[in-house]
Image (spheres, rainbow, N blue to C red):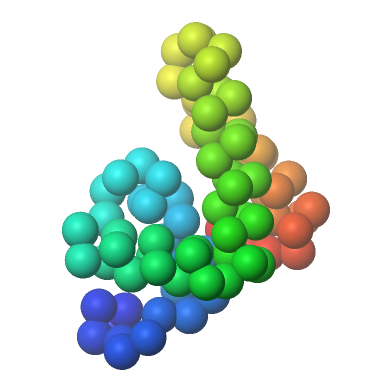
Length: 85
Ligand SMILES: [Zn+2]
């Protein structure tokens, strides 16, 4: 269980990134993700890319992104960065 880990790793962070962005993580976990991002350039880059997409979508001022679009964006990011979010 991720909460019990002493140290969270890149995989954990990437898995939590969506919730992190949506501010749906418990504060303690959120702080751990943030501190990982602060010291891991790789995850930092991924988070930044992810946030850009989210911000862009918000700026378009359109109705909330349909799940299909969101998924395709995520898949495109994953392909580009060689990850799975
Ligand atoms: Zn990392």
